[in-house]
Image (cartoon, rainbow, N blue to C red; front, side, top):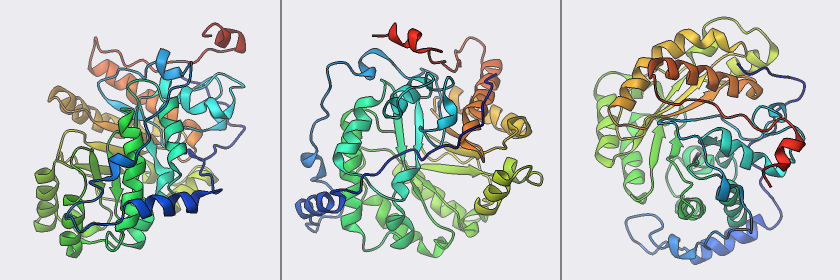
Length: 354
């Protein structure tokens, strides 16, 4: 198992450059004004600049793990991951590149708060290893502030950025997290929004309002909608976090912030997504991983490719939580390689890759 040094706090996954952001967005929106069609951004792809390749890029030499399942952390940038995900003393600018050689996906949570410019997305695509997938979250100004209405310009801007990643074959399902106030009475709004999304991209939806989980008409109707559109459903499992009182201040804050959403194993498309929140003592979540294990294995044997994001109250422990899951999968599926790659342990070893 990985041993962790917990001396430093994690930093956010993404870094949004404020300089020039609004001007770039304004120009983009000006090119993509809504023309009255029934879908979003049918013309957006023509505005994307092709991804350029520098002379020597990590994704020209390295690949993400080839597990049959996609597993990742909620961030790619964490000070506590030296010698775990990146070699010690690796410059922060290279953390994404090394992360994509350790995991094969990441939860792109920061786009929930702000959408960076096209150049930033192009840089992310260039740094990611072959086989890696970004799973971005819809901006909250679309999902929460506008509640999916009167936000065409914002959607076009976001989709134009996603197409940059898609052209580089680095885009996984993008997920729409709806707030606790978005209930089943808004199903027609959700249906209209989802039907306007480009079908060539992959989508997933996470519901938070408890009336969506009534095991009756509300739940059946939204599941039918997602199946009809081949859009995946996100399961948010915070049961491990709330199984017992917090053991430290970070867990206490996490319990105060995280919701307790009913847990389902509903499959509506090909990439069921699980976001599971563990504990800082990751072994406390073992019982819940054991419950998910036969479900994940069953999905894999059925030809699905599930996605799992392993959260811990302290992000520094997310790789250890992921490794626990990988070890259980290895035991359950002998002959399948679920090894978590390790980076070189010294600058001297790193130089051998040049």
